[in-house]
Image 1: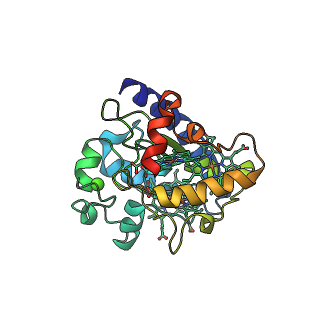
Image 2: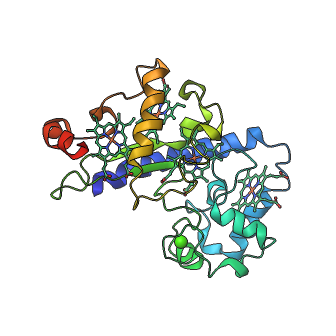
Length: 213
Ligand code: HEC
Ligand code: HEC
Ligand code: HEC
Ligand code: HEC
Ligand SMILES: [Ca+2]
């Protein structure tokens, strides 16, 4: 568990820094909108200097027109923070206000915004074995990852839901969409075999291949 936490908090740091920078760069009307963040912090002053004092509390991914579930609810409620406190915008059964009081992201179930860790049940002994790291932000904004901001490579009818949910297996989609792009990408950095995506499983490949049959 401590390993998981340290990896994701490092990731959180990087992701938050990159996110803020990218949003500002891509924004034409940066004056009006950071004021929503100011209003958010005035409404919940305990969040000052926490990870929630960030564009990523409401925006996902780092392109100006995209809002996560919490951001969308806020827009619909015309920026009335109180009105959406009892909602559960990321569907994790914890209300927005409880998440805010707990300093966890009300608009996402991910430990770090735009960085998802999928757990798989390869081993009852060690739930960490085989987990897959997915850097959503890099896959969206970094040229070498090929999507170039095109959401429809991954989202749309019969593709990934626009909601991170580690409780539901996305294996059939992942093994098609992720794997196919990696195989055809021509990049050595795009994992093309089981141990490239599923971490820590080199010693148990025999058992795992049986799971796929
Ligand atoms: C508490 C939630 C929240 C936070 C934090 C937040 N925003 Fe927003 N932002 C929104 C909402 C909601 C909208 C949509 C407003 C609308 O369409 O009426 C929005 C819209 C925008 C837009 C689009 C503006 C336009 O006119 O098209 C930009 C750009 C933007 N935000 C930038 C930022 C930046 C940069 C940050 C971080 C400094 C940030 N936002 C933090 C909620 C937030
Ligand atoms: C390379 C594939 C890929 C691309 C490109 C991509 N996404 Fe995603 N996105 C995913 C996956 C995978 C998930 C998690 C799905 C799950 O858990 O079932 C996700 C989740 C999300 C979520 C939910 C976030 C959360 O924390 O709950 C949002 C919102 C989202 N994507 C928006 C976008 C938008 C907007 C774009 C285009 C600018 C985009 N995505 C491009 C793969 C992608
Ligand atoms: C491109 C990355 C990638 C590659 C390569 C890959 N996987 Fe996966 N695999 C995933 C993702 C992502 C999931 C979905 C995890 C989730 O939904 O929580 C998954 C899910 C699975 C599952 C289902 C686990 C569950 O809990 O539903 C099995 C079994 C599996 N992979 C085995 C393999 C094997 C064996 C190989 C090699 C032959 C392989 N995978 C190659 C990314 C990959
Ligand atoms: C549109 C093509 C495309 C899709 C779809 C895609 N990837 Fe990738 N991915 C790449 C490329 C290209 C690289 C290597 C980037 C480079 O060369 O800098 C990469 C790199 C990676 C890496 C290694 C680098 C890192 O971020 O740690 C992982 C892990 C990964 N992808 C997982 C996934 C998973 C899981 C999915 C599906 C949910 C997925 N990818 C979907 C193109 C894609
Ligand atoms: Ca919630």
